[in-house]
Image 1 (cartoon, one colour):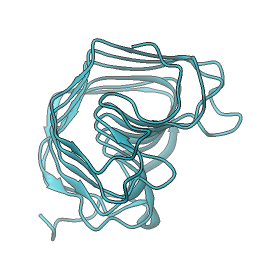
Image 2 (cartoon, helix red, strand yellow):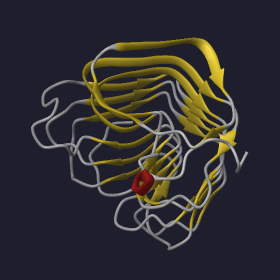
Image 3 (cartoon, one colour):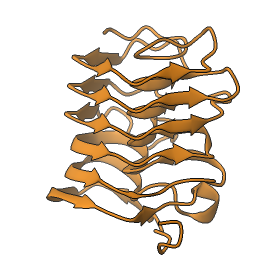
Image 4 (cartoon, one colour):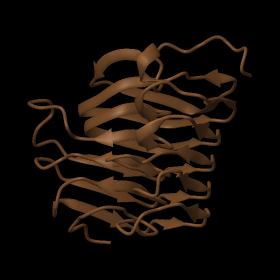
Length: 212
């Protein structure tokens, strides 16, 4: 799989509906943001939707740069539904998620649109430094202060290993602001968590006012 062709991220602000039809992708090779290969999609915004899609096998090791998520690197509005990842991720640092790298954080993009991640799961192990952000089974980091975020009916079964004793968690690696607009509903983690600093917990890491 390390010799598979490198996937180049679909570098658009995606606002359409991508329905994978419950198909799964195999032999997906991603090499990191510095190579323009940090997820299937670059950004999901506004009312865009990605649904019914799984990543069954691939190579995501020795990734270059920060910010990595298998389905989409960034989410600023829209819905991610019935998606899953089964591939191990190692080598990336900061803002690493099994499905989504980070939520919010792009100034002026999608402000006011709700973000929903539902009926998704991660089976892949994630290993790397959390840095000032975090590693999470579903999503790496929340930068949002102007969006409502709901994560529901999701789970992580992959091991999360933070190599620098910073931030990580089973569902959401870190919330970077003391923000109250986040709901995490009916989510759970069964993966082994190790190396996290004192700010991390099983479901969500970092300072937050999320309701769970």
